[in-house]
Length: 130
Image (cartoon, rainbow, N blue to C red):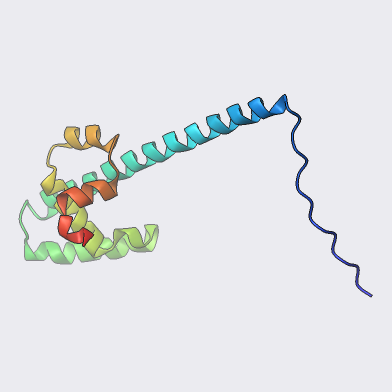
């Protein structure tokens, strides 16, 4: 005969004096998580701008050179193998368009503290949001 599983019980309520401590520690954790999220978004936005700028200036010479298509396709395949789907050909060209729409890195850096990559793409490419 198999033993019946023990019923789950809720964790005991903390003593009343612990409630303010719990609230304070929770607030510290949540604030830190939000800060990390903002920092990560800003870092990724600057990364995407840097990739787009480098491709746009160094490879495409600020135009849509046909040979650039092949280079971007090859670069995309190599990056996807190492870093995953976020570096598809389409995403790399979105990064190029982003760098073209916001050519000043300092402006991107300032705005990236408040806006995420999604916000930038909504501003620069509103047709993508449909």
